[in-house]
Structures are given as structure tokens and as C-alpha cells.
Image (cartoon, rainbow, N blue to C red; front, side, top):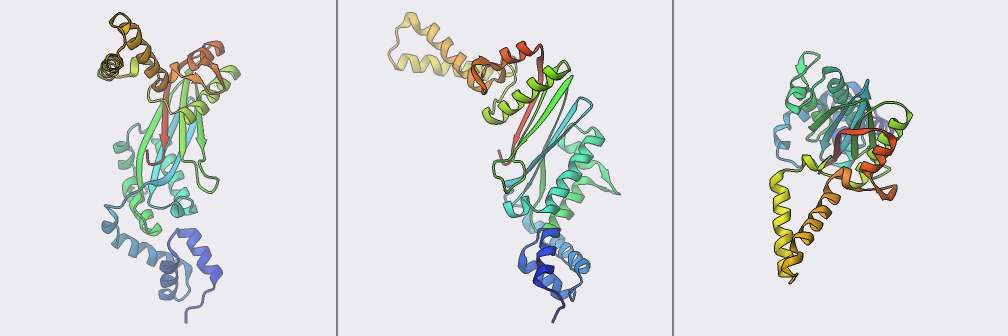
Amino acid sequence: MANYTAADIKALRERTGAGMMDVKKALDEANGDAEKAIEIIRIKGLKGATKREGRSTAEGLVAAKVTDGVGVMIEVNCETDFVAKADKFIQLADKVLAVAVESGAADLETLLAIDVEGKPLSEVVVEEGAVLGEKVVVRRIARIEGGTVDAYLHKTSKDLPAQVGVLFAVEGEGDAAATAAHDVAVHVAAMAPNYLSREDVPAELVESERRIAEETAKAEGKPEAALTKIVEGRVTGFYKGEVLLDQAFAKDSKKTVAQVLEEAGVKATAVARFRVGN
């Protein structure tokens, strides 16, 4: 009988994120040698990697870092929340974030092609996923710059890593800029705007909203003379829901986000928001 204890099983699960039966089988095969068991788990995991290609990766985490006015954020996905909170998975995400920060990569293709200890980062991710026993993918990356950049990470569950992440950049520096940038980053996490400013909204989307508003108003029997005002009012309502600068500020709904930034003497330059699986 293999020489290992329940504590050894627990320790190996924490190191690898692998399932209990996989860990026990590996320890049996390795006669209780933890390092050899990890190697066995990894080899078997790589053999099964192609079987995992079609699996859904709806769990995971968001990680971010700001260095010298440059903010970088990544989303790394896995299959289950068990793996999402495993030390091995969190360490992998930290490694991916470090590569993203150091390389200056601004898109996913470039990031995954970067050499890490003699192999592309994409291969490193697959190999680590093999150890974890799940499909693991780096889903996306954001990189923004500004005079002041705030990174805000939010946990939707206390038992899991951050599932929502925001990068928000403004022109200007100092305490007032830092406070405003952080407050708005927190707002973005909660209110999920899709665009920074009205100029960022595709023209065809605005026209679609305007057409729907007009057809709806006519169906409601609104008078022809009032249609223009009604339509513009509804389009403005659309902007208030979708555009960050038009939104009512979460901490003070009497002000818009644009007014909050103006009072702080700063101007928004960029925003990125990730939510795991969305």
C-alpha cells in the first residue's frame, strides 16, 4: 500500500488543483512521492488536453496591475470554481499578468506568443491546465495609459478570486485625480457602462435606438408634434444607461460621472471592464 496520508492528499490537491481521485491514483502510482505524483498528474493531464478543448470555461478570475501610468488587466478562465480558487490557478494568472506587464503586449495574440522559458505562453497555459485537470484559457487582455490609472478588482464571492476588474484612466495627477479615478473605477464595476463617451457609441447603434424610440412612440399614440422631443429624450435615456460619462454617479446620483470628474479637474481618457464569463 502506498505510503501517504489524508494530509498528503489535501496538500497535493492544494498544490495542483486536481480532483481527489486523480490525486490518490497519482500518489498510489508514485508510491507516496508527492513530486513524482505531480509529474504523473501533469502527464495524464496533457494526454487529456484535446478532450477538454470543447469544454466550457465560465469560471476564473480577473487580475490587474498599474505601473508608471500604465494599467494592464487580464482574464483567465477555467471550468469550475474549485479550480478558480486553487493556488496553482491563481499563481498561473499571476504569471500571465507579469508577462503581460513586462512585455507591453496590448492584444491576446501577441501575449500568448511571448516566449516564457523557451516556449510560448500559450503552451505554458495548456501545461498548467493539464496539471489542474481542466481546460484553462487566457480570454482577454486590456492595456490603457493615462496621467493617473486606477485598477479596481471586485469579488462577487468571498470564497473566490476577483471576478470583476476595472481599469480607468484620467489626464492629471495628484491626490484629487487619484481619488476621482478610484471612485469612478468602483462606479464602473457596479454600473457596467459599455462606452466611455457618446462619441464611442457606433452611429448605427444610435440610429437603431432612435428608430425604435420613434416607432414605439407612434405605437403608443403619441402626438406627431411631440415625436422629436420624445425620441431625443429616449435616446438621451439610452446614453445614460450605456455611456459612462452620462451615467448618474453611484455615490451621488444628483451628479453625472462627467460632473464628478470636472469637479476634480480631470478628464477621462480610457476605461476597461472585465467580468468573468461575460
